[in-house]
Image (cartoon, rainbow, N blue to C red; front, side, top):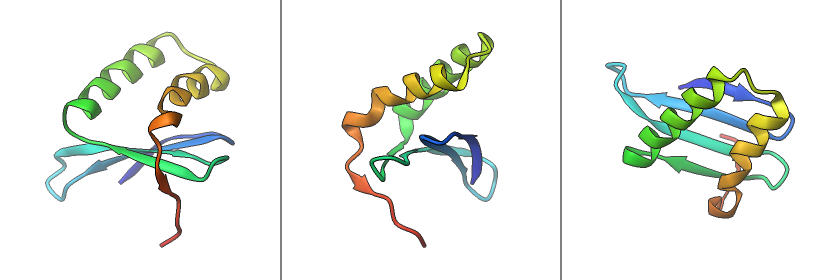
Length: 81
């Protein structure tokens, strides 16, 4: 587990297994206190889109706008463990 983004509004964590094989991303909306896990082909597309976004040196607002596209998909409430 590796946090790749953290702003006042969102947090994104990348997951890998014990062998370092990519497993997916968890996107958390701090304001609505909901999250979504992206695995498989969705995670691969997300990684490609993020790579393209980062290449343009975005502001925090631009990254948050990008992540807000997932707000409607977030159904799981955040919980501390």
